[in-house]
Length: 437
Image 1 (cartoon, helix red, strand yellow):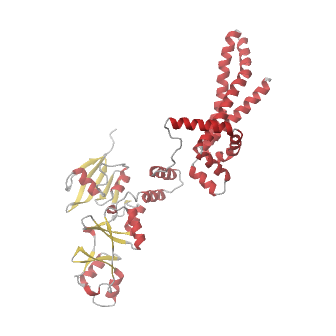
Image 2 (cartoon, rainbow, N blue to C red):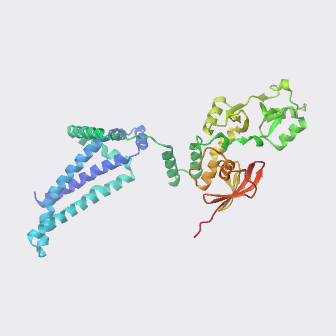
Image 3 (cartoon, rainbow, N blue to C red):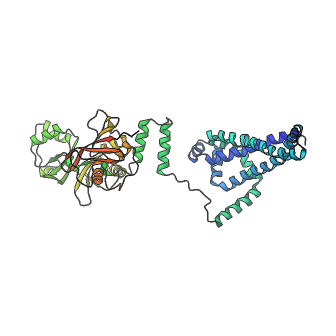
């Protein structure tokens, strides 16, 4: 073969190397979920790619056969093509043939290697990296043809490799189980790339965290529940309706420990507007609008709360602890507020976290520890799970019932107790310490 024919053969070998390289890389890094999407849209080539991914042994074998054959041929023909030419040039500058030939062989190997790396590996793989699923679908048909041609040889090598790996006790298949962290990372990547809006990203993250959020983190605490007493007069009832315009009220007998159910405000207003005496009658409570209320344990997650609301067709529930004591009240709106995650603001003083400036926040003691973690970018906390609110977290860290003006520094954040309500932290000032330069 003359030099022109050898050069043409080397170009063909580089092209074949590029094909096997781009096919291997694109199939290996293709996203399974994207391939399944293409398959559902009727792309038959995506089905073939998925089948090869499910049987990687044969896929890897045929690729390696092709690449190794190309490497051997390129070495043989590359030496015939480049060594004589390079040796001749070296002899022209004064080197003897015995010295020029080894140098020519080294230079030839370096040139051929550089050509194959650049045009047979780097460029094809960079192209495949940009759109692996599309490239995989383009290369799959010729790759399947090569696989059919070399099937006997591929089967023998693939079987041998699998048996050797089994004897070594190593796994031969990869578990494609998507974890919560991977899903969260994909969502974050979508937000950073602009596919998801900032608010959409936040809502999705909140939905994913419902399993980790305990019911206590979203409920209204017992001391904050506004309820109606069976023994109250009409004037007392009207005063509560005016002061606390809720749509529903818990009805109790003397205290929350004697829970009777709940009543809609509209039923009470109907009685008042009809100018009838509004006083609860023990014997006619159902006629006056009393409804049974859902009861839930304080150990369940917010996702389980949603399931209970859906099963019972109710949207309000009383929460009890393991000792049978009422500890709080939760509604569907409390869960939705958690989903929306709209707790950080500069102007709305009814929110649990109010940003004062770039480095300080006024935080309600009942704020969820999950929201506090998101605010400061914290990961796992010490003994997490034994507290649900900032109040519980600070009590755990301080090992006492905090007093007004008491301070503690945690993870470069200084927490100062602004106000206490009995034995509960009411408000906390959180200030981020400036890093020393």
